[in-house]
Image (cartoon, rainbow, N blue to C red; front, side):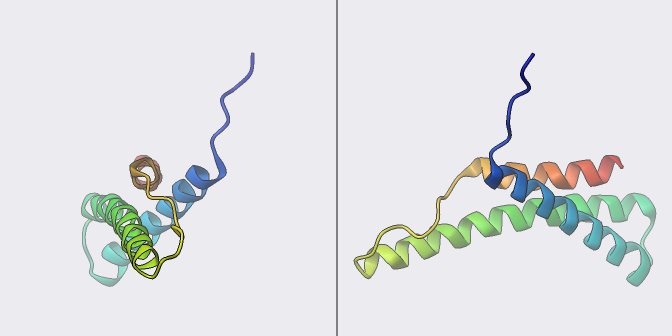
Length: 94
């Protein structure tokens, strides 16, 4: 049986989402003094927000490149944002 392969870009987004969620949850719990449950949700929301923001940034950069007569500099893919949020969800579960 062959397992499906995850594209490198999606794996990167997943790992970054996991890291963002851990840092955000830690900051909410330790720095702000929020409860464990609140901190976990902060982590998930932060990962999802960063994923959406990154794809929005890629979209803006592509528009600027096109306006200057250049090719697209990034791919814009909603699945990248979902992969980032998925990393946050794994941190929430853990």
